[in-house]
Image: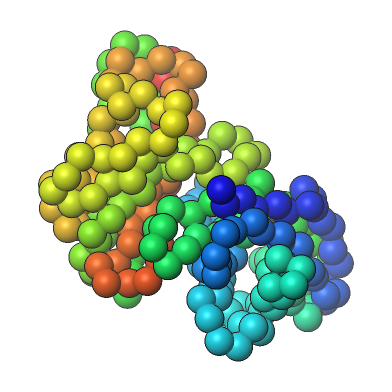
Length: 113
Length: 116
């Protein structure tokens, strides 16, 4: 069975500071990994995805994530956060033939001035 | 590209009535669409997978007679909540997988259902 764990329920970060959100996954084969962001009352927007190849992937809005197979992790990072980055962030895992995605519980990011 | 819309964005209905939610892929064809339910401050829970021209596949614990899903075309899937009750109040989100695409889902903006 596939699953995702996001250990941090809530993170508060100062504007301009760096941000790292943790994601650990469980999947029986090579995983497809995703990070989504959700603003209040909105749907999900894809930040970035990993299917194969370079383990450091770049996404939109200045985000990047690194796939580490040995640690079953896919942590999301941003060097300098902006107030507009305050949102809910979801990590998800799927596979090449299983189109269903499993989502983590999410991490709420609060940005303080 | 890859825009998914949902209609309505918000709906309030009375207990016992049925509500239909539409999910459309606006600029691509979607062989597969997914319906999720999200409770406040919680993650997305997959309810069912909808394939064009065939019956939907429901996740364990989801009542197929209560949540009717139809995927009549490559750009439209509908979710009908039948005989709605207050416990059905939730945020319903659909997503669509582009035909031929590996496994990237594009999400709609969600529909807030409130049953009174």
